[in-house]
Length: 180
Image (cartoon, rainbow, N blue to C red; front, side, top):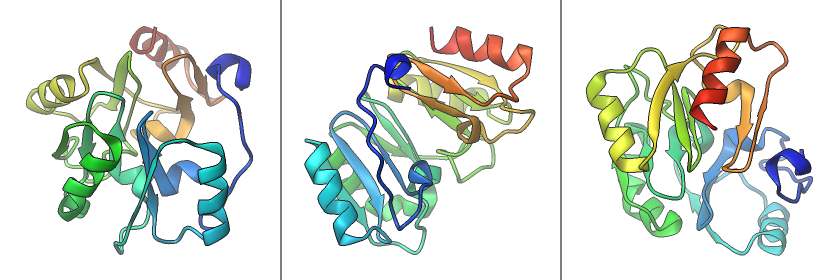
């Protein structure tokens, strides 16, 4: 993983869970994290990351499913709209509120880095334009393991991408095109 992503891997938990991507989302400037995070987990994050950390106090605790971001911009779910200003300050990028297709879970049905953004097929042309303008990358549609929940089968950054072993050939081709 370290070789592909060109990043140091740390073993941590958030909310006593190994499902890190479910409970947080971030970029090079900051990380938005669930209120379920424990004090020792915050301390560990502060030790390994030199970025802003913002805990969002909302009943919607799966921030990773509600936030799509890269180092240029951020799209958040209408479910956490009232935290838009806090998220913008933490990530230090413009933040817009929106959906992908009819999905509120924008961080679950898409994944982005500074090279591209892959979103589920259920997206309008207007939503594509909004995301491209906001994240400053090309957006393309696809699926993971035949499902719209893109983030469930991909880990990526701007250096590399790791994918689920069950990804189909056409899905793999699309991923390679988006994140090259």
